[in-house]
Image (cartoon, rainbow over all chains, first blue to last red; front, top):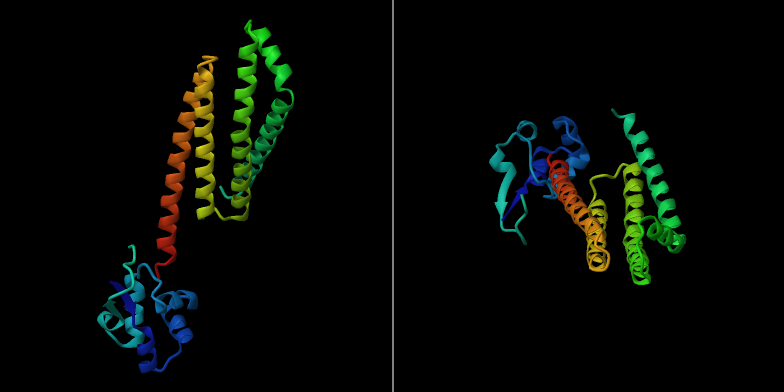
Length: 74
Length: 150
């Protein structure tokens, strides 16, 4: 199982670019890329709140639990 | 605190160079040095001298390996890459080299008993280096986790 961060679909729905979202949330584009590519090991509540605020969604819309090729070590 | 770190590294590097020169001198002058030592401690017998020379030459090989690896470690630290897997590998090699010294001196101890003291010291050093290696590995894992926390 692994956590998938569903940013791409929400970005398309809100019609904003990844760079703009990174600037609004206050994280670097590199960190947003880590999130988008499911490479993140953890996400801070403050980041999650800012993402939900900017993407007008709930944490459940942003994060989904999916079957992965291998379990991530957390 | 920050300004002290490079000075400490430079000091460590100077000590490493001094150690390398000492080890080179030992390798070059081991035969006359062993004669002088045997005269000083009033030890007789050609076999003991040969054992001394063979054991010390055998120990100088892991000694060079340790010095080489420590130079690599210092170079990495100068570059600012402290918490990297390469440094764990370096400490692993250093610990195995210490263990090798312990094994060689243990074998030599059956011919010249004072070598057993070196064995104990080498095995103790092996343990210390392995603990430091494990701590570094843990620190790298924690840094990795922190780097991928958004």
